[in-house]
Image (cartoon, rainbow, N blue to C red):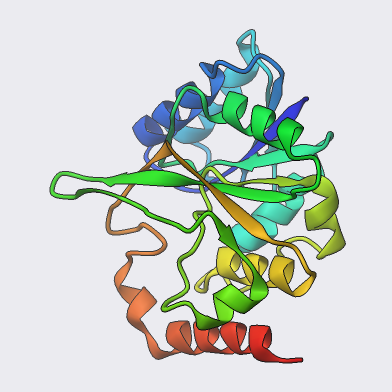
Length: 236
């Protein structure tokens, strides 16, 4: 099946973007479209690199958003340019393992009744080297009783376009909060089960601007957002 890889980019170091892009272009799976959202980046080395990709013999499509409104808005903008059944998320500072797309293609072919599937990740930086261990499946009931909120990774996750269309996309989650967790809650409330493969198929770069590890993720509004989202799962 044709896979859409969706990756927003905003002010990411160009060398990290290059690693992310090359890890997708060099995938084992031959049938994919790479949708890169230029989230109103200032003109400079990063945009020069991005638009230079269109000259290469590959399936890269750069779509520019004329106003930066946060990652949720950038992703919803990018979803408008995704055509086909399956969408795989990529972040501009991460590195996909070579078999990511091929693995997702086989998984969704084998499980036509499933709609969302994540992968395990290898988190790394100069001092960190560890791995996620997410459950094989997450239902609304399970998510209610889990400790914490991290049960699927955003980078590397795949979902059917019909599912994300049904829940209305990412929506208006503020850029300082967890747009991915808000999406998982919407999927669960809509009756979907979220699955995770055991395969480690993504390298997640941890740095001071990493969304889940930045200092402002400890702020009260961050925790209140997670709490209220989880309460939605408990409502009848």
